[in-house]
Image (tube, rainbow, N blue to C red; front, side, top):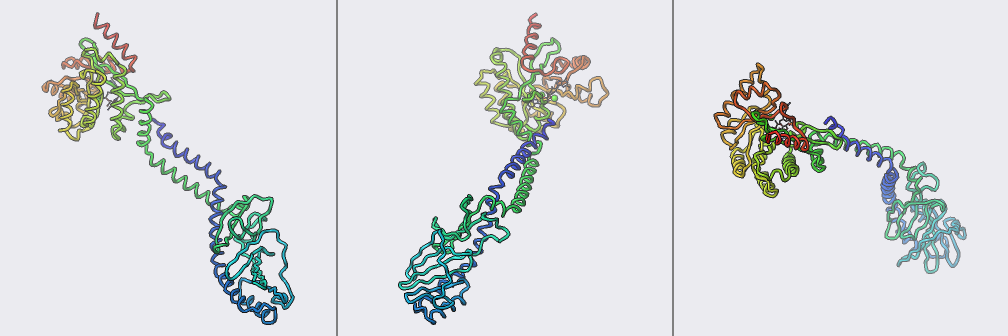
Amino acid sequence: MDKTLWLRWRYPILVFFLGAIAIVYSSQPISLVLFKHEVEKRLENIHLFYQERYLNLGQELVELAKELRYTCNQHDIALLRDTIEQSSGIQLLELQTPTGDCSVYGKNVRLIKDFDDSSASIHHENDLFNYSVSPYHNHRLKVQYRLPDAKLTLITEPVQNVFTQSEVCFGCTAMTLGRDGEEIDVFPRLDKKQYTHIASKYFGPNYAFNVYATESGITYVTESDLFITQLLLFFMLLSACLMIGLYRTPERTLKEMISYGLMKKEFIPYYQPIVDSTTGAITCCEVLIRWQRSDGELISPNQFIPIAEHNGQIKLLTNYIIEHVIDQFEGELIADSQFYISINVTPQQLEDDEFLSTTINLLKQRNVPAHRLAFEVTERIPFSDLAKARRIIQHLTDFGISIKLDDAGTGYGGFSYLQNLPIDTLKIDKMFVDTIGTNDIKSNILDSIILFAKHAGLKVIAEGVETKAQVDYLHQREIYLMQGYHYAKPMPFNEFKQYLQQDLMISKR
Ligand code: C2E
Ligand code: CA
Ligand code: CA
């Protein structure tokens, strides 16, 4: 049982180690989640920033298209200059007309190169414009408007990167514009590297900024955040495990162990004979439960019965033990004989209709005569509903099962129980038998109990008889039924069977 501490903490410790390993090994998915979250947040900011600019830009161009004469004369050039000056999103503007080209710098001064970019451009047509967008030097975009007789080309300001300069390792992150695979590179992807799509943010119905990153890009950006997140997860795991461990009080742990022991059939009955000391013959035996753990340890009932009584597992344990006893004795219990087996029950079980019916049904099912079974109920725990107990005990005794009062004299209700309940036998506790031959004040109580039993016409069994002197003392007071190490200790079934056979041979002689 000193293992309870280990049993209590083994699950929390196991959970902690497994959790810690999982945290260490899941650094990649954690990084990805952190990275995605961060990128989405930054895309959102960029979206806010551009929304205003491009809304204006569209407006400015509509105005410009209306006012241009498409001749590239001074009027047109002045208009181009004004537009650039007023617009925050446009860096360069150029007009190509059938009568010549012009830019803000004058007629036939072209600044925008026909940049030979192999990556695709995005085309778009609507009522106002027919235009295409393609990447231009230095992370800018080239937008070409095709009018019936002219072409208007503009270069935007550089597109804002989602990442700051210090965060970007070369080629680790990339950004595109477009959607559904029809994308143009703004911060291009390198051919040889493997990129994962991280996030997209729509800037209008047709355009989305898409962010990609390589594994080292993700690691690079999230390195310090990952450490803090993992540390946080460790603390959360540690607190959770501590809470599990604290919740698993020794009692809860033992409860769990008892359930497991029941499932593994680790509980076994031991038998201690109750002897008629005048003849030495065995009249009956008491069943004393033992817990044989898988490692061979034999646990005494005092270490788990109080817990099982407290949490209600005693019901299952008693039912299990009764069935086990019937299994072990098999046919021997059916033959008519006065020998009977006494089983310990709690007062609560004798107030329980279910216990009554399962016991009676079991005996009927297994053809065991009722007088072969007796229950002994301890006086240490009080009955809570004496009227109900009376009804159930009456039912059991009517059926043929006798009821004994165990540990008589140790509790408070003993005499009132004996007056109110159909109990036929009283078991004197070892505590009183131990006082025989001593000056202990309790030796007076022993005599009082014996006297009371005689007056009440009750049978008496003396428990814990260890010496010849105790036997003699009890004989003088006409107590003959005895249980104790002086005769035999509790023993497992095989041993008890041999003991019974020897007893049978002696009594036949
Ligand atoms: P109990 O009903 O008073 O049982 C008698 C206890 O005294 C047993 O202890 C027995 O081994 C011990 N004993 C008998 N003769 C002597 C003796 O001469 N000297 C000494 N030193 N001890 C003696 P055990 O087996 O440890 O059982 C302890 C208690 O556990 C029992 O006390 C009973 O209250 C409870 N118990 C055992 N089995 C069951 C069970 O199946 N159901 C319930 N509800 N309680 C049980
Ligand atoms: Ca007992
Ligand atoms: Ca006792």
